[in-house]
Structure formats: C-alpha cells, structure tokens
Image (cartoon, rainbow, N blue to C red; front, side, top):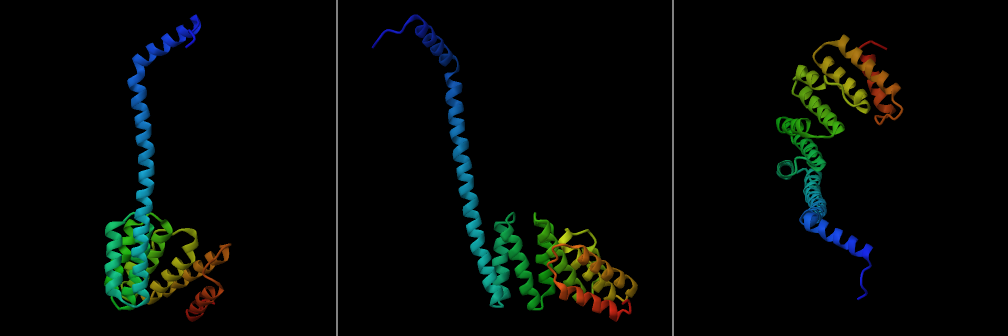
Length: 217
C-alpha cells in the first residue's frame, strides 16, 4: 500500500481521534435511525392490518343489515366499536346497525348506537349524520324537546337544510307551528344558497308542501 502523504496522514489522524471520541454516538444514532425506520414500517403494516380486519367486520355488518338480521348486525357492530373505536369503519358500522335496530322496531337500541357515533367519531360529517338520525328516532319516541336539543349545535354546511327541516318536524309534532314554519323557511333558504345540494329538488318540494300545510305559502 502506498504511503499516505503528510496531509492525508494528518486527516486520517484527525478522523481516528474524532471517531474515538464520537464513534459510540454515531453508532447509536445509526441504530436509532434504523429503529425509527423499522418502527414506521411496522406501524404502517399494523394500520393496514387493522384497517383490513375492521373492513372485514364492517362487511359482515352490512351483510347482516341487508339480510334484516339485527342480532348479527348488533354483534358485529359491537366488535367493531370495541376493537377499532378510532376507525371510520366503526362509525359506519354503528350507523348501519342503528338502521337495523330501527327496522326491527328497537328505537332504544338504535339510539345507543347513534349516541356512540356522536360521542366518539372523529369525522364531523358522520357525527352530523348520527345526530340527524338520533333526532329522527327521538321524534318517533315523541321526545320532541330532546330532538331539538340534539339538533341545536350548528352542523357542517351540507347538512344545514336537513337539520332545519327536521327541526321543523320536531316543532310541528309538538304543536309549535310558528317555530316549525320558521325552521322550514330556513331549510329552503339553506337549500337555495347551497351550490352543491345533495338533497335534490324533491326534498325542497317536500318542505314547501309542509309550509303549505301550515298555511305559510
């Protein structure tokens, strides 16, 4: 091997001295970086695995609802919310199961599932959807003031029309016709202001029919 010249020897000596002083730190940092990389990869695998398992259970909820089997939908939805409470699949599973409960005439069971979504979902739209369904259940139970309380917090913009319409239904059901008419008018105003209204023209027509029945059109 060719001999190092003086400058190279000085550089090599400096590198050796630095390594003797900091080599352990460098090795530790390299190990730490490797652990972080492996941890991120492991977490991604864990998340994917969790999502796949939750998706499979959600499919079971959907299938049981389609077969009008509330007992199974209740069981599968229970598994979802207990094992995967932070995933959207759990929210959707609970919403689906609440429909099965309503279809089976179990309004109390439906309310329990809807309340879980309201209390636990991280998605504002899903919480609003659950509140709409909860208010509808409460109106069916003749708990009109409770329905109005459920609808009280302002929803996301796409849900304003439906919230005001259902608020009108609650007021009308309890005999507060003036308040009902005001809510229906707000629902129509929200519909007209929306540039992307998913409710459709038929929904607006239904609200106008209610106003006519109240003598407000």
